[in-house]
Length: 112
Length: 112
Image (cartoon, rainbow over the protein chains, first blue to last red):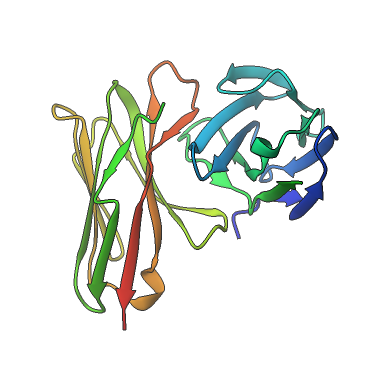
């Protein structure tokens, strides 16, 4: 158990819908990272937050957005969903020092 | 794009044998991390090696890093059936603010 929690574990929705994925980092970790894992793209970095502020952006679509709240949990919002958004979405956290990132169990999103 | 590229893509061995996986990357890094993923589940952090380190050990794992060749290797000694998983290298580049760039992974199968 990495100490990072993600909800929900599974999500099935339809094209055009909007979903919210939630992540709680390890106690004391200020950085939260979101990654997407799909068969064709592999593991791709989406976005990073540090203590509530956006720190870095990767291959994140404009239909996707995220935020980190004062209690340090983070949410990833995916809107206007397409079939190709079906993937595993991981959240990771780190203390920013050693930069070891600890991953949550992921949310498996299926868009039908 | 995937900075870390793993080799081989798949490896099949018998229990008790050693397994070696290689990773190459393209840019200067702060550190390189290895992760294990069991069948679509979460990523488990195995080991982190910093750019100024050449070799690191953790239990049955040995990681080497050659920054001049921009490559790393992961050796799993005396493998067990439970080591069957996908293994990913991930690089943390100097200007990345900690975001990780993953390779495509090596699928390791250990036969009992």
